[in-house]
Length: 275
Image 1 (spheres, rainbow, N blue to C red):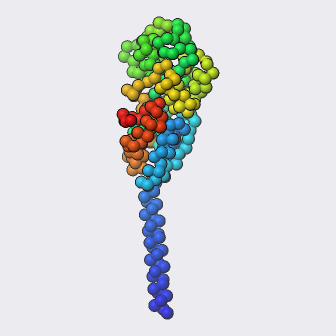
Image 2: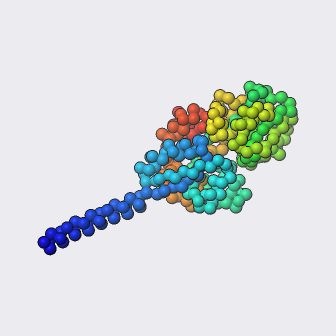
């Protein structure tokens, strides 16, 4: 009887150890990554790679933000492990204005900024004194100016860095176009739909979210050669963490880049030239 009890105890004790080891092993392999993102397309893209990352031991906890203000603040305050909503010039300006040290962990896609109009069919057709409505997102001003410069409507001061350019850097404006830039970025699609202004500049994420197709409906659109690549941002040093590296690798994989191109039909461009 005593031998049977000892044998039973040994079996139970061994099973307990195995369960404990298995639980410990699992907990070591699984990492929860808290990431903030804009709804479209960022959160959608993250949800696409979430199942793949889960198999690799990374659970994504996605928080959706409706503005460009809070995601970096939440990341700097350690409420997030990473965020995915901004391009590189935006990150640079945020760090400068907030004495921040957030870093680029890897580029994923491009959201071409585009000009929409209910008045003309081509950017070059804007009449003298036309009003162009632009958001108050300063880091986008350079890319907007580049569109108007490429159309031959303005020139810029010599030596201006396009990534940091503002409307004060316009050297010549023969048609006396009026650039008004006091609107929240998320309001731009509705402003366009309301028929306000002669032209409205809208970033692709808000355009797509509002059901607009920048490729087909815009009168001018940014090309793939833009420096405004949307990135995964982290706190300095965290870009080397295994979970962050796995996230970036999954987002930059050929399969995900093809999915981005097909999902958004070219309105959102993957950083890799895939089709």
